[in-house]
Length: 228
Ligand SMILES: Nc1ncnc2c1ncn2[C@@H]1O[C@H](COP(=O)(O)OP(=O)(O)OP(=O)(O)O)[C@@H](O)[C@H]1O
Ligand SMILES: [Mg+2]
Image (cartoon, rainbow, N blue to C red):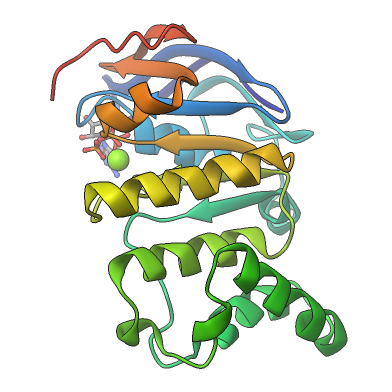
C-alpha cells in the first residue's frame, strides 16, 4: 500500500513542490497521476522510491516509512517497487536478455533462477523473439516493453511508471497501457503518470489530479482538471 499523509516537499526553502498531499493507493489498485508540468508528479514518484524524503508529513510504501527509513533499508524497499522511467534507462551494450537478467543479478538472484525467470518475463511482454537483440535494434514500443520487463522481473508488488507512453504513437501507447493493465490484473499495484488524456479516458481507472503541489481531484469518474 502507498499512503501519503499531509506531505509537503520543498526543494528550496519557502518554495513548496508539494503542499499537503494526502492519498492512499491500495494493494492491487490501478491509478493514473495527472497534472500540468511542474505540479509535483515526479516529486511524488521520487518520494515513493526513496530518492527524496518528505519535508513534513509521512509517506508509507509497502510497510516502509519513508521519512524514517535507513539508507541500508532502501534496497529492500526498492525490491517491492519496480520503476519504469520515461527515458527507459536501458543498457545499450547488453542484449535484451542481459538487460533483464542484470536487474535480477543486482539483487543477488542465482543463475538458475535467472535462466528460468527471464524467458517467462520476456514472453509476458511479447519480446521472446528479441532476446538476443540490443536495445538500439528495437522499436520505441519494444524498448518500452523491455523497460517494463526489467521493472517486473523481481516480482515487485508495485509498479510506478513515469510517462510510459511519452515517446510512442497512439497505437503503441494503447498497447503499452494495455500491457500495464494486464500486469495489474495479475495483482501488481500500478501508478502511472501520464499526459495522455485520451488513454486516461479510455481505461476508466482512478485519476489523481495534481495542481500546484496539491490534489485537485481524486476519483473514478474520469474527471480531468486541466487542459494541456
Ligand atoms: N531538484 C529540484 N530542485 C528545485 N526545484 C525542483 C527540483 N525538482 C523539481 N523542482 C520543482 O518542484 C516542482 C514540481 O516538480 P516535478 O518535477 O515534481 O513536476 P512534474 O509534475 O513531474 O512536472 P513534468 O510534467 O514537467 O515532469 C516544480 O516547480 C519544479 O520546478
Ligand atoms: Mg515529471
